[in-house]
Every structure is written in C-alpha cells, then in structure tokens.
Length: 304
Picture 1 (tube, rainbow, N blue to C red):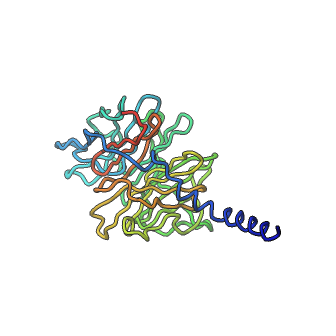
Picture 2 (cartoon, rainbow, N blue to C red):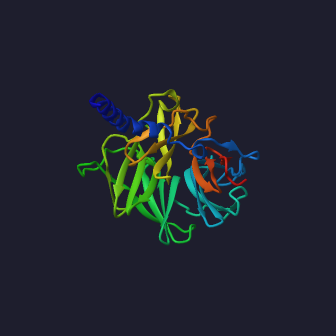
Picture 3 (cartoon, one colour):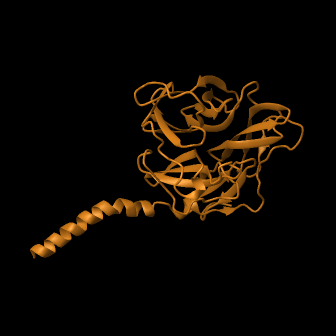
C-alpha cells in the first residue's frame, strides 16, 4: 500500500510539473492558426497612380466597431521619402472606400501603426522617421493630434540606449498599457505604463528572441496581441533571411505577456505575406496580412 501511495504521489507531482508544457503544446486553437486565402485577394492596395499613396507599406491596422471596419494605412510614392497616413472604411472588411484623395495627416511621418480605442479616444502608436515610436490621439478616427515620441525606460529607470525602437504594438489590460516594440527587428521587448507618458521595461532583455528555428532566425517584430480563452496570442512577423528579402506571419502564446511559446508549425502564412492581424468573425477569425498589399484569410467558422 505504501508503494502504491508513493507511486500515486510521484505520478501526480510529475503531472503537475509537466501539465503546463502539455497545455502549451495544445494552446493553439485551429481557428487561430489555420487560414484559407480569400479568392479575390488583395482587398486593398496602393493606387499605382501618381499619388501620395501610389504604394502602401506594412503595417496598416484594422479596427472593427460594430458592423464597420476602419483601416489606417501608410502610403508613399517615389516623389517623396515621407511615409504618410491614410484612412479607409468598409462595411464588410473586403470592399474599402478611401476617406480622402489626400493624406489625413500631412507633414508628418506615420507608418507601422497600431490603434487602440479607450473610452471615446483613439490612441495611435506608430513609427516616425528613423523608426522612432510616437503616439497620436483622435476623437473621430481622421483628425490626429501628435503627442510626441514614446519615452521608454530600462528597468532601473534610465532611458533605453539611443537608436531605433519601432513597430509599437499596444494592449491595455487591467488598467495597464503594455507596449511591445522592436529594435532593428532583432527582438521584441515589453514595457508598461499607467499614464501613457513613461514606459518602463518589464525586463531589459527581449521577451521574444529570434530563432532558434530558421523561419525567424534573422528578424522578429510584434504586430498584434489578443486575449482569447484565457491566454494571450501574439501575431508577429519574422524573416528567415539575413537580407530580409522575405517575411512571414507567425504566432506565439503566453499566460503573462512575458513568457512566450512559439507555435511549432510556424509560419502560419508565408510567401512574403506578413504584418498579420486577426479579427473575430462569427465562430472563427479573419486574418489580414499587410505587406505591400492587404490580403484576407478566413479560419474555419468565419463568416465569408
């Protein structure tokens, strides 16, 4: 009986230590990782005309409010080195109407944006010139007020080292703002803020590093973080090539936003389709990639 009791004790102790790993291995629901391309892609592109938005670049951002879809995008042309902000809307997330033939925020570099609505205010976190993250605010989605570059600090309160810090991706959880950012796409860091003025690293090392597998060996940057069924899922773009000539869309999971497990079948979308983000759609999700054009994908259970 003592031997049996000891065996049972060891079995349950062993299960307690291994179950988080088992859960992590099974923590990627099919609706978050398996997608089929929309037959009539792309759903949004640059004009390919002599306009400020002849071409578009990653990362645009889509926010759904009720039945309406809002798309903020970055347009550029060979005539100007500046990357400008545009806005389009849609009733179905497929057919889009540009708000204006002109940029909605002239005179300032805005690209690689993320938009969070809190209360009645829209907060945009974007890259400016030199890949420096800054914040803008709006009440109507179209008219934006610049709030300056993000002030990011090390754990000890000193400013992070000089240099680029871009692809800002923000999630507000339990009253705390969480900022994921990259430095030359060489890792993903996490900083938090209570006042949107000062951001402090949770640790001074990346929370997501490059590698060890080939698909994200040379670059990583977060595009979106969602909470689903009690866990956090981060969609991030990555490159398997030193010269970054091709990118992919990938996913990782976390219970605390600090410790992440990458999906063992990454990438979920390849062929240079990156800067991916998802929106809940019916019983499934739709995924948009936004690398030079906007493509749409549906998971099982999504409305089509």
